[in-house]
Image (cartoon, rainbow, N blue to C red; front, side, top):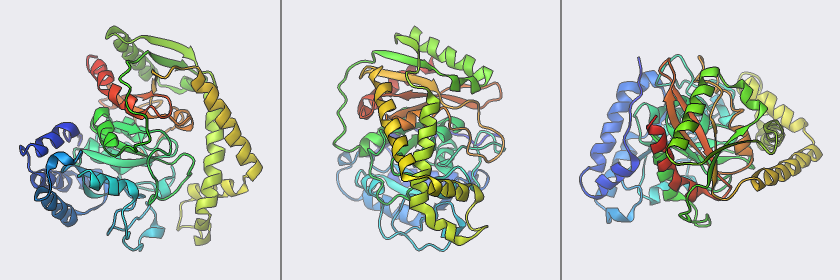
Length: 430
């Protein structure tokens, strides 16, 4: 039995509310009703702020000109490592079960409210957004399978039609991977482009807030509404090339996924895109190794206090990662950063400003169980800092979604976001 459902187009919902064709309170109540119907099975939500959300929707409805708000009346879910005023931030951890309510919104939440969004509640995450630790969320397409992590609840809530958009965070693959497993769109902007003030830290060098929507264009729309002004505007330039990279890492891809990826490339070519293949200018394994060194070193320094709580309070996998990070010397850390910076420059020097890299998002469809899934196809692109959009493509023989990643140069966020609809349209013709 599937619990997947289209929650609606973000742009269409906002436009209808701005034009008075749709009531923000009525829309919100529709999603609350959907949550009441299916979340007992999917378990995407840590807490649903029914009363506050309804009050906010009523206040917005009676307030200023709707046209002033880019996200007027849009309900949004927020990953539970991101502060929402009046709601505890639990970080997916038993240690935080008695945490008091946050006293202020994270900057990104404040920006969403300023754009007219309604914060519907907090979605489940793995413990401290690491890949270890129990979480209850299940994949709406098959409850026996993982929705991916660490932004498990955000991906599943959108995929189950319980909210049209949600926030997640990505340090390795924690936005783009849940989107791939749940068959929804995601947009992970350039690293550090959105403020992470009010967000529980994992690795500040990589921690990046991303957005989910039913389609990639929905996720991109939400990002563009809160995008910082320092990002370069969309130049309007067309895509020069779509580039599929060859790297030994892709030997891990399941046979049918590889065949479907080739079919997707063929569809792009048949709809007018120039599609090229070339070897990765830097082995992806090097990016993965440097990413691990940097992220665990920073995790150890930022969350080392979790070692004080003893066994059983914090999960073993997280504790082991913290211990590895604390054992990593500053010299090793600096060498990894120097390696990453140099290799990232080498990598991007091989591509033009209007090239888009296209890659499989994950080695296979969502696995059985509660693991967060394999991040190895996503981590290299996270490490080199550019924006990444997850676009659903085909459905496997078992009825599970498959997706591709589309990646652009760091800072080209608004340009990539504007190209996403055309890429999606090409894929929809499959």
